[in-house]
Length: 314
Image 1 (cartoon, rainbow, N blue to C red):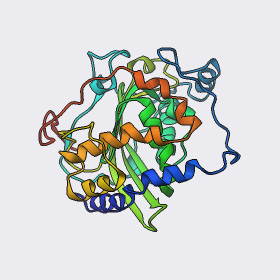
Image 2 (image 1 turned 30 degrees about the vertical axis):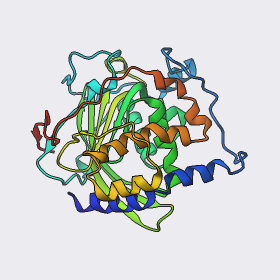
Image 3 (image 1 turned 90 degrees about the vertical axis):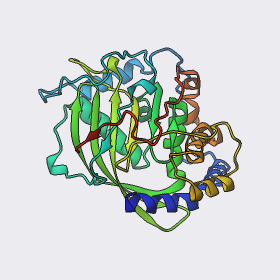
Image 4 (image 1 turned 180 degrees about the vertical axis):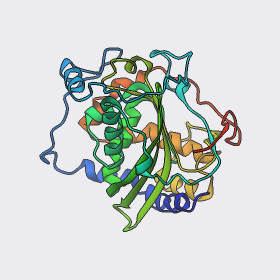
């Protein structure tokens, strides 16, 4: 396992038992904090974008002549296909995902705006509009989280500022710009709120794009599957039970004693994603509560993690 990954795993495990407490503590603070909350209502199957959203997206993302590879990674999928079907799997030949921004592929304005929003989310700057970058049936998949709808996803992004004093993007490198897939190497430094430590993590980020939002006149591009992979091996998602009731202290024990993506470890990844949004006292998160009913598929499992994950050079 990559050294920086072990460091983050250790630090995160020490703070995990305090996640629920941190959220609860924050929720009892006075509500008048000068924040502007979105009044967006649950949208169900309706379009998640207002007319103003679309006009603003069009103004800032009029496509340039920047080349987009015509490769289609999910030829059988449509916009109605659940997010699980948009996972890109790979086994890297190296754990070295350190980006070289000077080699980054150029993106057209619509795609650059998408990446800018994702980097802002990583940097503890969540907004309702940025979370709208995901479809209601999206999946977010990383070392610590498996969130399989936008409501759960919103809970994760809006919880980050409660757990970290700062998150700084140190640089990224776009390495793939296909019609329905953007991949980039990302370096992010995380400073914990409850532990005075900073961990810098390099990862491969894969954004599988909604087929209905890409093409000749793409403007506000949305994501079906967001994978953050910090190791050479892909995720296995073999799990013991995602329905087990756990308390925060037990979660800490699990993280310390198990592989985060295998067995009980994956149960924690899914359990915490299933519950964090419920713990949040946040109007922003509640804006996406209707997405709990978005279409889902059964969690896909891949044995030791190499299943359906061909070796690739990055």
